[in-house]
Length: 155
Length: 125
Length: 111
Image 1 (cartoon, rainbow over the protein chains, first blue to last red):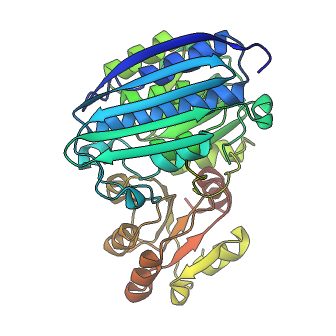
Image 2: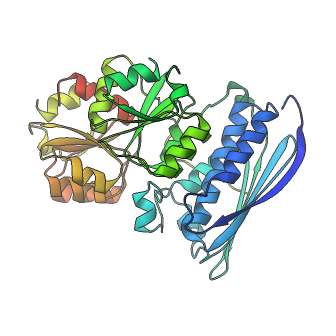
Image 3: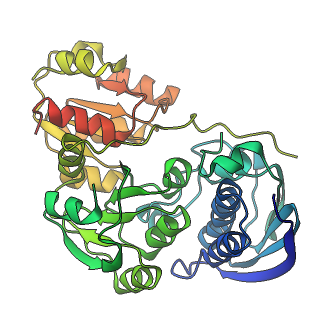
């Protein structure tokens, strides 16, 4: 990061089922990082992972929030929800596994690839969940050399 | 190829983002799965899809795509069109199938996107 | 055009349904949503998708498709290949994107 990020923190509410609203946290994060000339690849990773986290709340939970914190060279994204929780986290993390509704699938969601995208884009990823209560995902984003090339796939 | 050229090739009608008509398009991709689009969508890519809801527009904007072509005459809803207009993202509708759209554009030299690694997650904390 | 010729020209990998390669191909369909494929694909078509789960075999059988090509370097699930073997459905894979596979197929005159 050429210029350290200005301190910023904001909580974005996400409503379950409100597909037309979901994605605002990701859009805002991308815009702010762009305004501060963060490397394109870095902004892209934050945007993709945040979007996936927001959509998970929208698709599966009753409500939740995505908290974004930016400072110095790092961005932290915490997605917290009140919802059914995840019974088997290891299974949920398997590529292709999804419990999304038919409605969600008809919109192109529920392919079971969200966690894979998040883990690939984030530099640290932590998830915990409680049945009947909800799920909490925490991601940390740190600079990577390939971010400077802008838009390289997260692999 | 420009968005305007692509509109002509695909017999497409423009619904939003006319300001982006002169935009140059380096590649194209056909996809109906949001997470997959998030994985392989590259900046500047033109998306060909049958998905019509607002989240596709938002995703396309997040990935800095050059525009979206909705295939088989599928029209996006009003919310999607409004969002695209506010973001300056070109939206087109073509009567052709996704297969024919890919075929015609590829025949004119528009390349696809080279896929990255298969969906393998990184380590998690 | 026969499926075998397409497999060879496009460099596709045959993962199931080897016995189906003499099938005449009638056209192509690209879609990742099963409902779209069911609505659009015709008998004898090649269906190009990035979906890897067993449902694609069901759809291919239902519509009497010539083959399913899983694009983008994606790997079909074992359950998918098992089901394809049982039902005699051709499952092919390509490292190239769905757009490129479709483009090359179209170029061969499959329309």
